[in-house]
Length: 124
Image 1 (cartoon, helix red, strand yellow):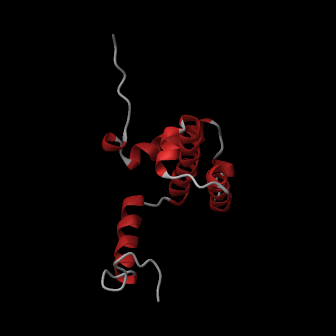
Image 2 (cartoon, helix red, strand yellow):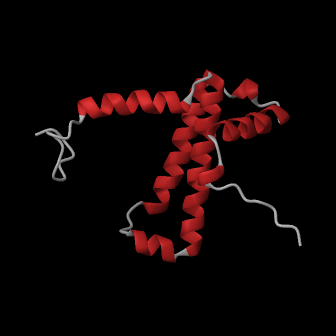
């Protein structure tokens, strides 16, 4: 019996996602449609589809985890958002790790532990 390894978060790199999305787009000749504006709008549409799954419902984590169909739909929409985000990274030739690290440094200054502790999530 041959076991095909499944890529999971611990063993998958950002660059592998970027390569896979680029290949998918290139094989379909979709680069012409993957402008920054179109990708941001598509990303927003997919994020809205994700939001719609939870709209006017009071699911907690346990409700979602126990509802296999809902969890699968949420997983699909998260993947769609991620795919468009990765395509935007490719289109703009951005390094996600670098952007993440730079933004986290800004956030640490903007949301200091001294001012945003004990559950406070907004400025007083």
